[in-house]
Amino acid sequence: MVLLKSEVVLKAGDKAPDFNLLGIDDKKHSLSEYKDYKAKLIIFMCNHCPYVQAKVEAMNEIYEKFKGKIAMIGINSNDATKYPDDSFDSMKIFAKEKGLKFTYLVDETQEIAKKYGAVCTPDPFLFDSKGKLVFHGRIDNAMKPEDKPTEKTMISNIEKVLFEKKIEKDFDPSMGCSIKWKSQQT
Image (tube, rainbow, N blue to C red):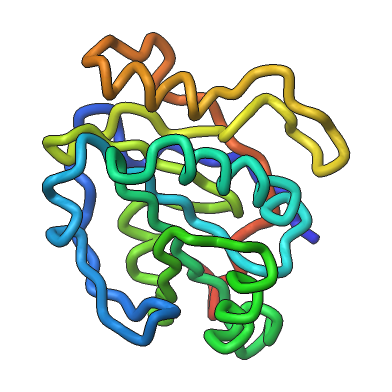
């Protein structure tokens, strides 16, 4: 397991790169279908990573707390050939077993992860109603799978976005397993 911290590629104020990806509902989804939400939370994630598995409860809490107000989208960019636990069929099973209700998409070409600069799982990006990046970073302050969070970073930042308050720290790196690239990233 290669452990990485998220890095800055998109900067605060940058527009969310568009996508057109297949979801576990067997439909294609693009960023434009979420344009009417007050915020968009895009989380690069996968099924097999212990860091993602440790955040499932927190992700479900975010979805339940803000459903209808924010769009929440999980994107799996891992190489499913080398990591079959992250295959499209496994994504459907994982979502059902873990009770995920938010959109979960597959980025087979890995181009979307590269456009966002995602490097680890989970790697969350929070955008405002205009589609501008306002926060890139951790879901909470539990940095290892066995840690218990004492601060709900993402919930606090989503609340700030919804109430149009400034997020003081726009980058607070997440930590997790590296995205499993099909070949060396260029």
